[in-house]
Length: 309
Ligand SMILES: C[S@@+](CC[C@H](N)C(=O)[O-])C[C@H]1O[C@@H](n2cnc3c(N)ncnc32)[C@H](O)[C@@H]1O
Image (tube, rainbow, N blue to C red; front, side):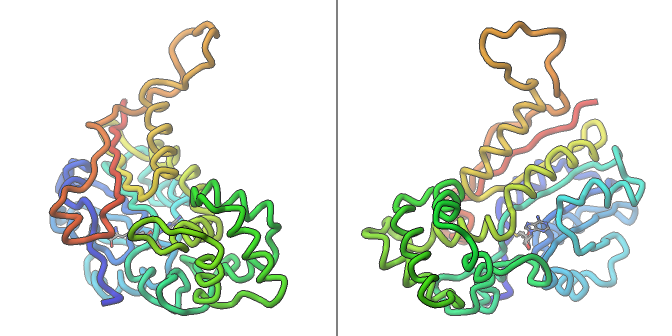
């Protein structure tokens, strides 16, 4: 069960990528290769897929599942390096489509040892790449209450952020926080009510995970590199899982499509800056059938842009 990941919005993403059998594609978030497998099915012998993922488990999976396929190259890397990696292959400005399916995969969430889950006990880690950076336990051991509070507000939109931040810091000052069960229990005791159908630690775990993995920094870094790598007519497809990420993607794509919005009252001098993308369709969400089959798809949001000349 832990190794199953159903790719979300699969048909919509493939259509959004506008796949050509001989095209050059990049999957910046390989995961378990669900989207990658479907892309490879549609590529001919000269099509190529470059896949990245920072999780060593994804590298293992890529070798197991697609090891013999000469059309696929897997690189263990964060997607904020995509520009340099694409340039290194001589693909700059040549790429037909780039997919980013953000966040964590089901196997990452379901494996207690990775420390993402508030439902199962495990070491308090939460790193997508456990070989680098610092674990959630180390991060929580040194953060100030004010900084933690900000993370809970900004990355988790946690209603009870003050109480939760205070409870975590008080507990941490008593003894080190080392397990997910310990953290989940502290948060549950601090949050006076829960949202229907949600564990009280859902938002705080999300917020801490985003901070530990610098997820918004990664997203801000990859978007301009992705657009720069595309050829004219190439597509950028981004699937996000919470409003914070989606707001960044929406804003970025709109600026690239319409130019940066100037403060009201300022005269416009010449053509607006940007204008590298054309927006394709509107925000796409999964239908009822997909959500029933894959509850993780519930919050998925897909946006598509096409590179202008
Ligand atoms: C939602 S899963 C992708 C699932 C994949 N599309 C599939 O169908 O199997 C997201 C994946 O992106 C990876 N990831 C997230 N942020 C990343 C980053 N900044 N750099 C590289 N990989 C990242 C995670 O490790 C995870 O494996």
